[in-house]
Image (tube, rainbow over all chains, first blue to last red; front, side, top):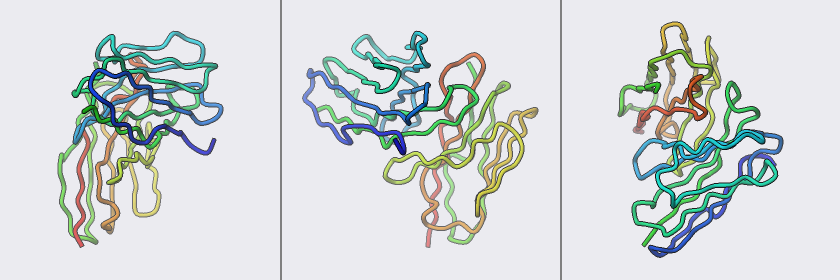
Length: 114
Length: 109
């Protein structure tokens, strides 16, 4: 694709519900990152995928958060039993090889938990 | 882990003024990128610059890897330059890009 695509753009959910956020990386990019940005804050790393290697999950804030990447392409970030503090913009990025290659971001998914 | 510090945290300019944004990092890095986050939240790539100097129109960037800093220059600023500027680094010890806290730039007409 032309760029990193994320869906939905906006999601409003009730506290306690599960949500799934989707990321389509740039075609051919083997590395994929998820970040979270709370209102007015910087970017917080969540998880990193590189090819067929085991993902780096060191940034996931709790076991309610999980992510998978099917076929080395599309990734889904799942948040179970959402809490109000999960409200944020979730950003996905991809790069050709990970380290030493330029990363490009999608437009983000704005999640609001009410 | 590696620390990334950006300065100043906030900057207000009159249209047409020049500015310099700074990014310091605490260890050797493999890679450094500058991004502009526009008011709609989109992160726009400005420079991929692990070392040396690059220019793109009114913007230029210099990274001095041996001294662990990078500078972003904005000349003849325009209101559309407003937003938050982030630098992000790759460190050998981390898989993720490590971001600074950003510089919030406001350009007034």
